[in-house]
Image (tube, rainbow over all chains, first blue to last red; front, side, top):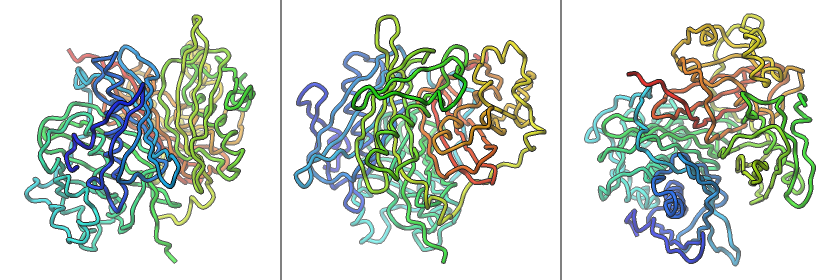
Length: 278
Length: 278
């Protein structure tokens, strides 16, 4: 179940009703990675969208609220196409799992689909990709301590190379800048595509690690925009946070492809356990 | 209908079903302002949330997809509480209007409500408010040309003072920095509160004006986070965009209260008509 396309496979069991299987292979500390769930829900809703709006292939705007942590096992998805427009088709998707005899909703998302043709031009301005060392001179996450890697099966699915300047947290010396950046691709070199950008927007460790806060930072709300079709190869990702207070932080992510084109960006609200200064 | 509390008034007509009246008094070029619709939908869903979760008074995370432009006249809202948790209650709300014999959905939103008590501490970091001239040395939007003010009734609802450094577009000399900032409050000095921050996050002119793009920039997707209770008085707002291409731009908004505390932030995907360089 370590194959990305397998993880996104669904079976239609009724109108707007689908089944899937979530796998621990994509988990972090027992919970299935949120980015994978975003890619899965968008891909599933996308099947309904394409059936009627064949040009609206890409999830241009994706907004999700996470309701409970997903676990290894079967899942059900419900999809609804809300509106078919000329340039955008908008829909809703929910993911459910059975747990303790109850049906629990894991996340609900609203997604606007459209075409990426013509989204590169006319081009007025875009944030340039930060200059960082090439992948072979970055910190390979597979070299992390074995017990850490074992608790994060997701690390086996990706090839993640962190800029040494923002990987100090792994050695106990976080930069305290609220920034993390590096290169990422699938471990098995599956090609990146528009839908998988939703996964890559949330595949790095929490940016709070760079502030010395090493706990889990559960996503409460996530909003991502896919702006262009990525070129094959490595993606460059930057995470930032500027506001960490009262148990919450925002995490802004930006993804460029290997040609330096900005292809996706997101902002999420995440929970974070801030050490009491006293 | 220029009173904000009147604009947010709804009547319950069934379980999760409400009626409201949208007014041209809050419109821009014929369409009702999206920020007002966000405040209205959050306030309406909030009635359902409070009835069961009395501490969850503030819309901490609000995500909306805009489906069609709202107009002066009656509207119907449908609300659903999805999940009641200890720290967050999450729900969904849609706004509909009748037009041309059809029921059209105007926007659909997912909202996470919680308490703002304890959201200020512990405080690790926050983006400081930019230093700008005081309101009395900023550009008062009510001094704009009369025909412009007449086409934007919303300007009569707010007291907006733009930093002269980012108001050059009004004189045909945009700064080209992709930034707009200033002070804002209700024109009638109604107190600001957590819910109204959703309105203020989207009450300024489009940031694209500062790039010399003077057309309407319709919001497609909006995601806002309310981070703290605002102190009474002026709010300081900053808009930025870094990525303008292929008919889309992101607009990031940050709001601080008069004490300099960051109280809300948002990111939206908006449509923008980029002049062809040829």
